[in-house]
Length: 601
Image 1: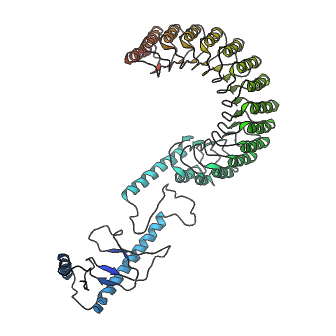
Image 2: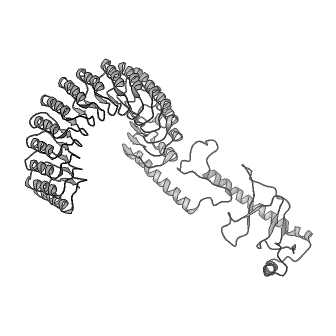
Image 3: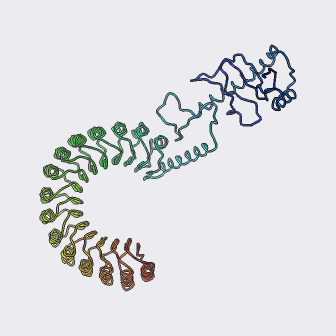
């Protein structure tokens, strides 16, 4: 049976109100502290009207132990005696005043917390400078110990990053994952910064919203020359925002925006930037999703821009149409020195248009990367014609196409007339011994080429023989890459014989050629001969076992004047005995001439 009574506030009454408040201990940490009330309010309302307040004791079966205990406690803790319901007013009024006063104090505290921690309503889009997203709800603990620790650590880390920006000319903050909030904090350190010249914010989870942090910062910075934002999903919106900011920048000369989810719309924004910015020299847009339309926009910008030196568009979707559009832009541009179009599926028709445009331009191109573009022997013909007539090209990459022996022969004929190219990459083009022999004949009379890459071509032992016979006494090759060329142990014998006489090759790559112990022993014999040129040799993935390792170790010990400083034998079949022999040889060489040989197992 229920009963009505006047009881202490320290008991457990039920409070009846027009809108019954919810009992809460969120603002009260001690278990024995007075009850507090989380009263509902919305928006910025901070007050409520206290209505009728009735205190009732919880009803329990008469004579129960809990009821008797509560009753005795209430009688001992409070001087009030049993009275009619009307007399309860003498208690309700003071209690209401107490609750109202307490809530007013809590309201003031809440306003202070809001002022310190909540974002200002006038600038809702800008994250807090502390680099943390706060979410504070009424009636909850405002800052737990764990959250406070995270906040302090985050702020300390960002402060350290900011110090780096102010102290060093080159700062790499890639992969720190500080996001948009962290960028807003760090961007302030770039304003009027006269120290940092190269800054990388690559791969930090920055989105289009974070790019706004540069607004008002980059316009005032003239010291920063390189800005790297690659690997951040800023998309077209972020790129457009950045371009609007850089229009008024007078410092950034190298802009790196690879892998940023850039599409044609963003490419159009960059094109407009190129038309109005005369400071930018290097633009990297690799591994994005720029299609024909974006290539067309960039081509139009090249017609008006006279300062860009290097354009990187590797790994996009230009295709033949994009190459054709770009060729028209290149015809009227005189400033571009480097063009990187690796992996754009240009094909033979696209390469024909591109080579035609490059041949017609008056500018001097020094670097051309057209690797992995589905170019066949037909397309190689157009490349060869360009090589014949170009007097400025220093570096050309045709890696991972399919020109075959026929295409290799055309390139070789063109190289006979060219006296500027120093580096050529023909790797992965299905070139056999016939094509390798054509290239070898060119090297006999060409002393300009210093780096040749024929890796991933099945030239076999015959191709290795043709190259070795020429390079034994001719050419000026410094770097020779023949990895994955199927030369075998017999091919290694030809190479070893060539190394006894050659005095120009410094870097030799023979990875994955099935040399085995026989090939390793042949090469070891050449190590015994004094060769002051060879410093690095790569024999990884060659199925070499302990016998081959023992032969190489003995050769190193026998030649006190060995010039080799790097020997790679990784991914072979060496046991601890072969490794121990090589380590002993390494130690002996160091003791004899204090020269360190880095051996990789």
